[in-house]
Length: 129
Length: 187
Image 1 (cartoon, rainbow over the protein chains, first blue to last red):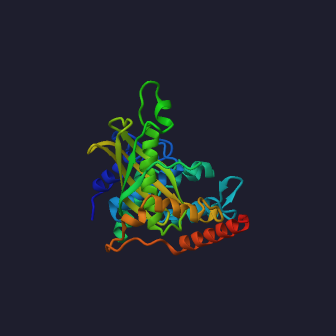
Image 2: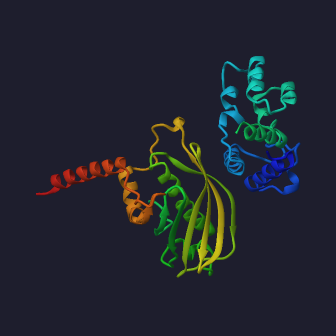
Image 3: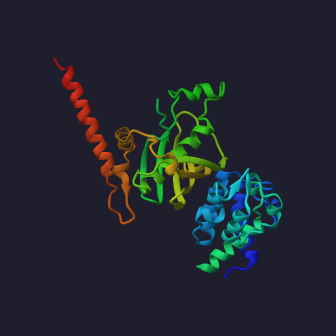
């Protein structure tokens, strides 16, 4: 089982390679979109690199639940509803949604995911294997 | 007009690796026009050739049934220039292949030395793009034959890569249409 440091180092390498950022820009608190400048197509690149580095499979809807964020059932007036937040919590137990809950605007969602969230997700997948 | 940025494949291992050659010629329009008094092959077109090599490797892995598009160039480094008379060798290796696409590492070598390297992400268009055909399959097959893919291509078990049936069907239909057109034009 990899240690937290080993997971972080591999995640950092994947992010440095995929996003062209410097090593020291990638901290556990960095947000993927706001701090590291990840765009939607970068997530495909990141997923490929994480899958290869850890020997895991990452279904897109698991890490980035687009279906919830585009669902009329879970989104009203551009904001995720209470039911949508419950669904997101269920689907993303690795992510800290507390800040997003303060202003659950869909456009803010991409800015929520941090490097630490990504590491927790990877650990959950590695452990499941 | 279609752009062809490789001349042909030298090696092609299904799902793993492809090697293609590109001969740089002064007769190509871009060479004298790109940089005044410095006849070089533009880096963007070298990248295009590297992506071309990798994209066809990815497309073949899916039996040429998936619609493969270049999604992102993650990293590109150039170490040298290519000038008329040079022969570039493009090598692409699949790093990760999934239902959604693939990550490919590609290099360009000149006289045995590394002159460029790139990480390229390819995506498979999903059902949202259903009905959009990127290429005419008969024309596509003609290009693949010109690149000698089926002459050098092998599967992981060493057997040759065969032309996919859906492409052969398209080619037969195209030939029938052409025969009929010629028959009508004959006196």
